Image (cartoon, rainbow, N blue to C red; front, side):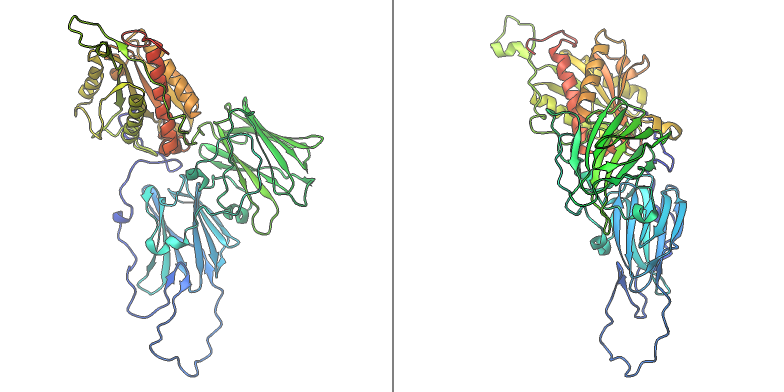
Length: 591
């Protein structure tokens, strides 16, 4: 809701910046030199043109030095970082964008082992060895967002791979390298018999979350995992399954591996074949019941802001793993789980549990959930000239205010506030109109109502003064400065004592938003200075639907399923207010 742009540190997201490539001269020759040289397209050597026969008796070639890959050159400009690798003839690679960075799997050359922290603002760590290179980023990568990759020919004739990283970059691999990008295709997952937890949305299932922080070779080789399916609200809040059958049952369970990213911690349990597991979230932690494995009593404390401690407790049939978190977990929020099949040459599957209080429900709404129950019409006074009974009732009118707009972007972090608030307002309008509500939008496009901010807010509030208007709801996105960004996540609703029922409206909105999204609840807030509420003369509330400044909550705000749930939660809250009489004119008939 803040009217100014929020620029985040390199550990999180930052505000929009100009194209890095345009900020400095391009040091690469983008066309091939006149001399015929081997050309690489993702490392596949080009066949020489058959224009002249080779010499009859070529001189013996000197012994070639072992081809290597690594030792990149780097440069940064603001939030964007460029990494350049030399490509020797015969080398090939694949590009694997993930939640936590970009992995290159290299063949035809020895990868030079190295571990380097912070190559630039957008590359927080570089790890290389055992055939792979991983460049870790402080923001998630998708197939097209957060990075660019291209090849170029130097003036000297050598070929290079150019990787660019930045929170506002888009494009992914260039057209000639598209075939080298690893997609979401993964080995078939083990047979699972699951009883709960929502499925991981495709947008996140395609991107392995961060955290497998053990040996560089294993960390770099993590494939994109299959999502654990199966959410049944009629069954207990537990997720259960069995790793693929096979020898190994009764093996010792190693200590969990822990990976840390800003705002999220990942716990990885290596499970041998035959292991069964059951995950039970609740309270301030999670219990993982394992059978078919053994372990000594182990524990550790002060793991991360998201994980206070973990503990192994041997049982008669196996091991109970307890993960203590700093905030409560529910069936749908605060965590997600992925089962990763074994790597080539290994028999161990990996149960990866991501923990963050900002993790919300990103599952798509079912067709039944999208149906909002009809809202009864509002009685109006009957005059002597009443022509028909139908005319004695009118649709209840609600004003929706999409915060900011036009020259005022609002908070800028992982998203731009004015864009998200308009998106959500339009979705809320669609839900309410289908339920029989007359919806008035303060804006339906990217515009402000007046260039002066005070006047703009007054005009928005004034739209709720039209006769017959029952409620005013303003939609915003929260943000905190970079130094406190990790402390800001979840949903909160504000009210002002402008009307006796404003606090009740705020309570209904907060209740239904949290129930529908599974997001962390920051509760209700009261503020006398919010002009858009203070100047309203009807029940009014302002919802903050998440934090653009938080690395995990920011991902929520980019997810269309989450925005659907936010919109439905707001619509449900408004409907509840209308049918319960939390309105300017009082209760209506029906429920």
